[in-house]
Length: 305
Image (cartoon, rainbow, N blue to C red; front, side, top):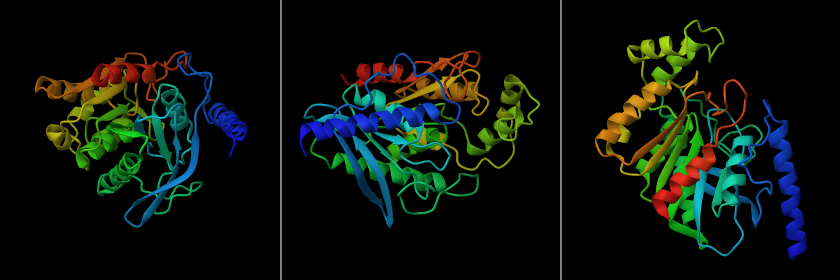
């Protein structure tokens, strides 16, 4: 295929990607730190990788050049979404422009995706997070097998529910060099669900302020389900959390309290707190995105360059 055809395919893909992003639910103006040229370089579509008998289908976005490139495996939140979820596109658009290869894949069992398997919701009484983390590890193994990838610089990254999954995946694979959790909970699943109920994030009927819900969540006595603390206690992989002070889904100050404890023990963990950011890391009053991807890139450069 000649370069003009490839260039045309890339341009069409860029236009489609921006259209999906801007017309998705709750659209927002692209932040000024997002490149205006979307996903330049080579676009290799319809890749697949395996986790046991489940086939995961996705897209590997590559930057210009010959490599070897650092790589990111992007991880979904709790919704049944595919590789063209607007946040996964946003991550890829940004990091491809900064020299990363980015893998984004259809969540297992997602209704409009090509991955096989069954969609897994996450409650307090199952091991679904373990299975989803294994999917991420399979993605890491796939990108590691490619000649154009720097196998020493593979990271995993995602929002919300992914905050449980990415450190769990790092604990399962020595090939994960770093992980990044956006609005990631550093407490049990049960505590996060309870907090969300109190604030109204789940059913829209919560009666507590965020500070009141935080106090109640710290003394939660219900079913905790999966708890990330034991995993983080033994994890040696560098990690970054970016959190919003007005998050009504994840109790940010409890996450920070737990992270401070780990940092005091010498863990290579870092967090950034935007005081007025909501769960989506947008300003609660203006709707503008905070520069969470730019801050992630700067953190990465301090660690690996």
